[in-house]
Image (cartoon, rainbow, N blue to C red; front, side):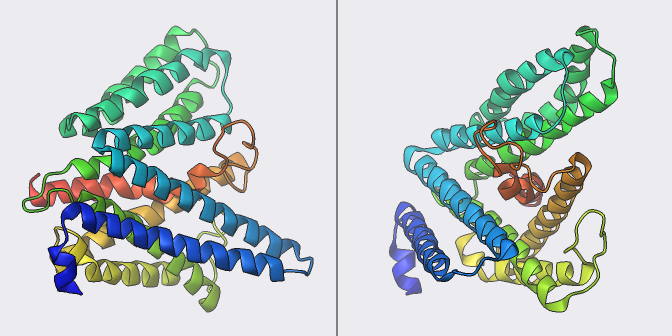
Amino acid sequence: MNTFLRNLSPSHQVGLLFVLVFGILAAISVAAFVMSLKDTHEDDLHSQKLKEFNGVLRTSWLMSTVFWIGWTLGETVATVLFGLVAFFALREFITLSPTRQGDHRSLVLAFFVVLPVQFALVITRRFDLITVFIPVYVFLAIPVVSALADDPQRFLERNAKLQWGIMVCVYGISHVPALMLLKFPNYEGKNAFLVFFLVFVVQSCMIVEYVVGRRLKRPPSAPNVSKSFNWTSWLIAVVAASLLGGLLAGLTPFKPAQAVAMAFIACVSGSLGHLVMKALKRDRGIPNWGKRGVGVTGASGLLDRVDALCFGAPIFFHSVRWYFGL
C-alpha cells in the first residue's frame, strides 16, 4: 500500500485525500440521517444537539468543497475562496457587535481595503508583510480613521472590537491558504496535505476534549466562560491529537518528532483560542455567533466552526516557517 501511494504523483495523492475526506463525510451524513429518522421522542436537549451536529456537518461539507475547488483551480483561487470565508466570518463578528454611525469609515476600511490587501499579500507570498500588516499598520490606522469621524463616544471599546474582529477573522484565516504557498524541498505539489494536517489535528483535539470531558465529568476550570472546559480533559486531548499528528508525519514534510511538536503547537493555540472566543460570546450574551445572525450575515454560525483554526493557523504557520527557515 505504501509503495502504491509513493508511486502516485503529488496531484493524484492529494486527489486521493479528497476522495477519502468526502467519503467519510458522506458516511457520517448517511448515519446522521438514519439517526434523525429513528429519533421519535421529543427531547429539546437532544434535538438541539442534533441541530448543532448537523450544523457542524454542513460546515464541514462547505469547507471541504471550498478547499477542493480551490485546490483544483489553483493556489490563487484557493486564497480568494478563503478570503470570502474571512469576509463572511468578519461580517458575522461585526453584526453581533454594536457599532455607531462613526464606525462606517472604519468598517469600509476593514472589509474593502484591509481584507483584500491581506489576501493579496498571501497570493504574492509577501510573508514578512503578512506578519506585520494587520498587527502594526492596521492596528494604528483603524483608530485614526475613527477619530476623523468625530465620534468619541465609547471610542476605545468600538475600535478594540473592530481590531479584534480583523485579527481573528482576517489575519487568522489568511494563514490557512498561506500554508499552501510555503516552499519545502522535495515537497512540491503536496502543500494541501499540510493544510489537511493542521485542520485534522485541531479538530481531533476539539472532539477528544469534548468526549473526554463528558466521560470524566470534572468540574469546569473556567465555569463563567465554559461549562465543559477543564485542564484534565484539555491536556488529554492535546496529547492525543499531538500523537495523532505524529502518525500523520508521512503526509507532511516533517519527521515524526517534528510532526508531534507542530501538532502540539496547533492544538494548544487552537483549543485555547476556542476558549477565548467562548469568552467573547459570553461577553456579548449569545450562545453562538450565528444565533442572532440568521438571515443577516449570510453565514450563520460560520465563526463557531472556524474559531479554533483562526487562532491555530497563524501560530502554526509562523512556527513552521521559523523552524524550517522558509
